Image (cartoon, rainbow, N blue to C red; front, side, top):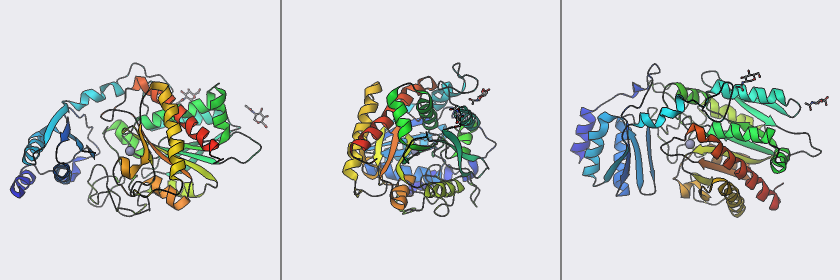
Length: 413
Ligand SMILES: *[C@@H]1O[C@H](CO)[C@@H](O)[C@H](O)[C@H]1NC(C)=O
Ligand SMILES: *[C@@H]1O[C@H](CO)[C@@H](O)[C@H](O)[C@H]1NC(C)=O
Ligand SMILES: [Zn+2]
């Protein structure tokens, strides 16, 4: 067995410098594998492949592994799988085909819409336009600058009311390739600001909203222009590899679970230190400056789940039962829109896998924020058709309404 792994690493060596910023990755003929069998065997396979090659996507949830690999790695995957007695299935033979309708999109409109995916500049342009159209109760807010000098731009929506309102914070797009999250977040902003539905208007008026559609703007731009599967930031490590996972980089139990110490790891490199990434450092400073934060909601894709703290421990928070009840109502509201069933609510550690250094755990621990949630939106193979963004946008809007409604029932505000 050692021999097999050794041979593979000798004959198919590749350096970590393959994410050369001048390349555009097309994912032509990349294979999406589903792998089943002995969990330890799958773990071994993933550990070896991700430690040796550039693997743009991999996961192990429950007893199923998923893996996206370059065509030249097919013999290696098959050899290891067969050695470990695993069954493999190529569910997508050419991943580039999956991505096609995202870019060449007849539904795209000038300015902004929710029938296409847009780059950071357009998203920011939209935020700017909305704040200009409603200057009395909305304003642009900046939670720092990215490594490449982009703003981490958000919109604050705070309609004038007699009483001080609790803050509701929305973090979106921390993982660059989860494109549906900025798209649904701007959709939600649009609902809050323009909906004629009295319930949505009341939702808007109930909170001092701080909404950040793309908190990893460098990563998103890179994913948009160069490498669809990019997930991390774009800082440069000493060894020449790029980026850290901004959801493994927060200063709480940093690197304990589910994070890689290898800067070339495509997915979960935790960074050189807690808050080594300027994006997480400045966002956390912004959050620390918010008084009276009742809720923190993070959007991810695409496990279709509602996750509660903690990500790195199965320990239940003091108000776990409330979080669960509020989360259940939230999912019920969402389900009513499209009959799409989410898993959970439950702790991320129990439902997904243990991972340390995420924003949700830090917010809950460092800030003691009562209502902290991570929504894993829907999708398949990291893809969601642009023409159907509004479907999830409506779902998310109702999920937020359900969350707020049940939180009020339980006396949280
Ligand atoms: C912002 O508003 C201007 C002026 O109405 C418009 O030309 C532009 O397309 C809008 N941009 C976005 C991103 O909505
Ligand atoms: C904004 O507030 C100002 C001053 O209170 C008021 O004169 C103006 O009509 C308001 N504008 C809008 C669009 O509500
Ligand atoms: Zn994510």
